[in-house]
Length: 261
Image 1: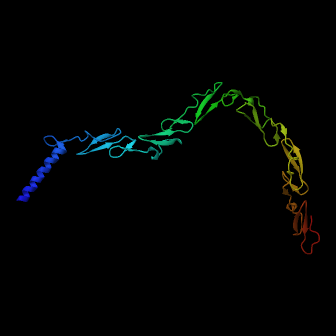
Image 2: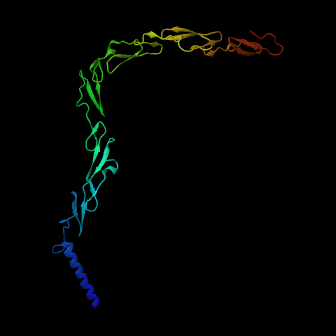
């Protein structure tokens, strides 16, 4: 009986203590707010629990009471974007951005057109750490401030005309067979380097190109093809035809002395 009384007393004492420290109200229906006097630091928010509380920390802090600094530079992805360099600080971080980017996390592209003037009604297009001026017809240069020399068609027919963006002068890219500033000078292919014609063919220069006059037994643009005289089947009586340079020979069957057409 003593043991039963002791257990009953202990139960009621524990229940009374439970009611006293965790809950309140006539029916113990109200949870006691444990946040008054909390130890949450560095702007942490106290979140009440049952006979306890938790600290909801700001992004820059961690730990039970928000006292441990978060190293944002070790987070993935990095706190600094577009190649920026991250430096951790107590309670935060700083970003050193590469050229062309700005903002706390280097995510803002600097508008290079804001401080740039494209002339003659050109349109400015912003890029990363640079800009591009889209020039109207007849204008060229980095700022479209120069007259386009290609408008007057200074290059010979077949050449490609470009303009120097620094001075506006025409740059002619010549087609094969021509040279010179305006691509109007013929290149003598027969006098430069080795003979372009094979098998001792004779090179004859033409405007913008050349021709090969082939020797006996060869053909093709560069005399590279050996003419097979046996294709016309000049040998008779089942003789074997042997192709030679510019000629052929027939090997007659036994008993035949003449086997050529």
